[in-house]
Length: 51
Image (cartoon, rainbow, N blue to C red; front, side):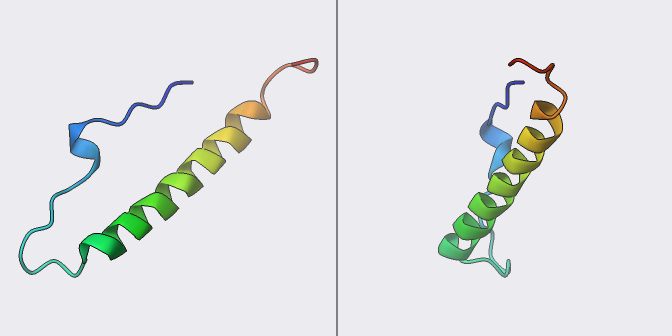
C-alpha cells in the first residue's frame, strides 16, 4: 500500500476559520496518525502467515 500526500491534502487558513496554524497542525497530525494506524491494522492483518 502506498499513501501519497499532495498539494490538496493540507488547506490554507482563511479569515473566519476557527483554526490557528498550531491547532490545525496538531489536529492534522493526530488524524493522519490515526488514519495510518487504521490502515496498518486493516492491511497487515490480511497478510499471509509467515510474513
